[in-house]
Image 1: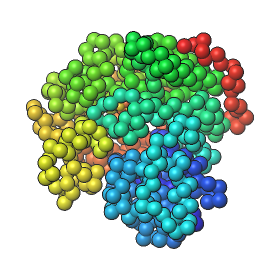
Image 2 (image 1 turned 60 degrees about the horizontal axis):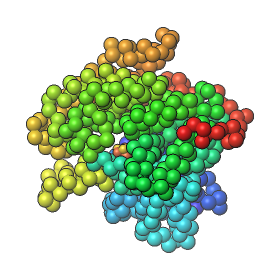
Image 3 (image 1 turned 60 degrees about the vertical axis):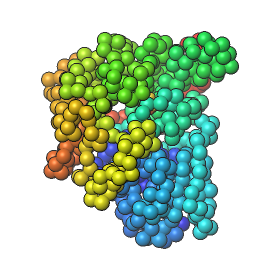
Image 4 (image 1 turned 180 degrees about the vertical axis):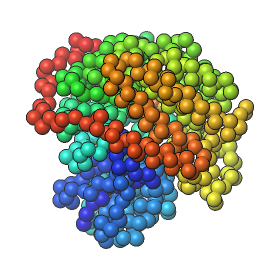
Amino acid sequence: MQVHLINPSHVSFGTAVITPRWLYVLAAATPEPFGDPVLVDETLSPLNSDKIQPGDVVGIGIHTGNALRGYEVGRLAREKGAYVVFGGIHATLYPEEARDLGHAHAVVKGDGDIIWAKVLGDCRRGVPAGIYSGGQVEASDLVPARWDLVPRNRYMWASVQTVRGCRKHCSFCSVWRTDGQRPRQSASQPVIEEIVQLRRLGFRFVALADDNFYTVALNDLHLASRRGDKQRFEELKAMRAERFELMERLALLPPDMVFYTQITMEAAEDPAFLDAMRRANIKGALVGVESVTPEGLKDVYKDFNLSGRGLIDRLRTFRRHDIHVLGSFIFGLPSDEPGTFGATAEVAQSAELTFAQFLTLTPFPGTVDFERWERSHNGNPERIMGVPLTRHWLIPHAQRPKIYSPHPAMSADEIRQRTQSVWERFYSFGLIWRRSRFLKSLKARLTFVLISKIYRQMYADTGLATDSGRIARSRRLAGWLAKPCRYLFSARPMPELRVPDPCAVDAAAQV
Ligand code: SF4
């Protein structure tokens, strides 16, 4: 009985930006008697189903974006006589869908780290249960990934997770509902061990693939202290100290390492934290700006962000600490007006963002927005190719609408076109070249231009273009550009690298 783990994708580029971490975590959670699983990442190359034999177990992890392909893979595997098991955020939210459309024998809801061994045991005995509840695994039980199985020279970035869950409650995001609002923060030792393993293999770019790296804001401490809640205050302080300890240990790793994470904008008010990030070589962060207007921030329940001048100052603060920001914006919010697009492009430029992404409001399952949007159809949604709009991920890509909610002031087409033009403006050659000024050499500046263009190509055209010819061209171009780009990210392996001694850090002194 062979175990296969498959990360589904309709598009394979041969090279991928980031390792799908879940494959390597579940590989580690696979008990030894089952042997090493066969790992298939379809963002690299499509599945060869001839390798699946009757009685094998095929684990398929899906999020909403790749669920449709995941179901195709599930049906193929079932035809081959394998046990089909689905997991991931989307399967957790819609287990029946995975059973009906993906022909699943079993669905794992929640984290797979612990329950996976039981699933495999049940399949071996021929008695898989329909549903397994993996729950929210405590940080101390999170399984470190098996990086010895990662293919060489195929990925630009590796991914390590230091925390699951987020205290916030943004209306368009499902993280706080699926991963919980209590951040489950790993101790520094297993994180550092994984990173050292990756650097030994030649990965020097590592994404800290966290829901929100800034687990304790200064304001959280302030509120606990004002309430006189001593126990809570001490808990938060300990968590914060743990973050500092991790960053101080990251700083002891080889200086050519580059880390990137995801963080809330409040971190800009915490210079000690930003300084620690700089020392740790966390050189970039995705910051969810979402909207440049107070009305827009209210639309998405993100009023802890600032707008106007305060917003620009906060974003620039990251740059003053040498942290490059990928700013994420959403268009199509109810309060957006035609002028919002230009204003956003201005803010993105003047806030000194290094990269930016401009998304259109999409109701994703598991979010507050989705529930509200689904209810608004009164059980009678429009159908496209027989699929209700409220199950938009099941509509073939080419026919999927780009905008889902009717807007009070603009047509769907206007929002799409204006969004496209903001992408074009931000990623025009002139502005990219101007943004590259922080780099010294011509070679580095040209590399920056190449990376910016790939980023735009991968995310703008494929997401927003409406004609299939343009989408196909964009994907081809992104694929061609990605291959030479991967070499820019590789480094000489360091098999002799040791895990830095934890005693070398006096974290408490840094807080
Ligand atoms: S968008 Fe970010 S800050 Fe908001 S809930 Fe999701 S992870 Fe947390």
